[in-house]
Image (cartoon, rainbow, N blue to C red):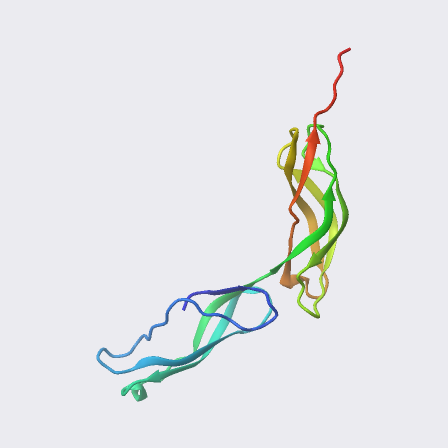
Length: 173
């Protein structure tokens, strides 16, 4: 089986990918892998270097009694689940040669699993893709993080925001 990877969902349920093969069966023996594999993570928490144990596999065939199936485990990862941020906006402004913009509003997150808590904290900082005049200029938002009991199981997904930069009036003197 291949490395098992999933986003945090609060469960130990795993899904196997790839194919499995028996190693060590003598050529010509009638011994094959059978049963219904049931993969389960060691814990439901986010992390790398985790293990998925696979139970429910059995040896089948007329020579199966000559073999003992070793415990099966697969390397695994549970990645933090992304929480969407909403409630933030960008104020359009006049060109000033910088890429920083004011982020306003009160950010909130959605997508937490029932009964879990994670609080959005930090001061959002907006940075334009370009400092030049234009409309619908992409803004990347940084400076936000999560805190609380279950924060480690989640990651902040910054909102998709844009801004308009208008030309700066100048005069001749």
